[in-house]
Image 1: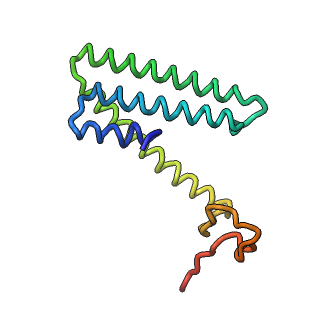
Image 2: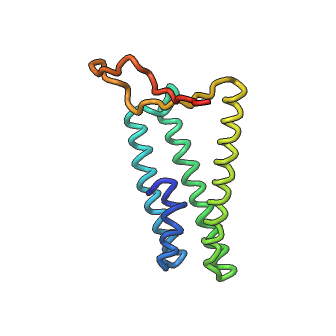
Image 3: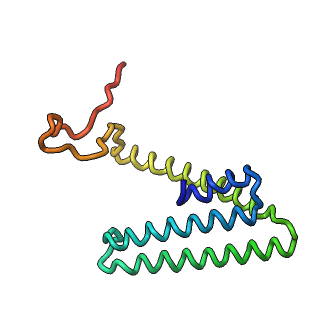
Length: 149
C-alpha cells in the first residue's frame, strides 16, 4: 500500500484514524521516500532504465522529485503558518486524488481510442508468465475469449 498508495490510500486512512494532518503528511512522505528510493535503486542496479547512460534518468528523476518535495513542503508550511489552518493538507490531498482520477480516466479513454483507430485492440487474456517448453500448453500464446451471438 505504498508508492502512489502512500499518498492516495494511506493518507486518508491515517486522517480517518484521527491523526493530525501534519503528522499524517510527514508519515506518508517518509513511507514514500523509502519505497521510491529503494525501487529507483533496484531499477538502477538491474539496468532497467532506458538509454545508453543509465544514470541520467536516475539523476533526473531524483532531482525533479527532490525539487518538487522541497517546493511542496515549503508551500504547505507557508500556507499553514500564514492562515493557521492545517486543513490545507487535507484539501491538497483531496484535490490531488481527484485530479489524478481525472487524468487516469482521460489517459484510459485516449489509449482505448488510439487502439480502436489503429486496430490494435486485443481483449484476449494473456498469460502472466511465459509457458514452460515442457508444459502441454506451450504452443498456446493466449486464451481467447469466446463471443456468443
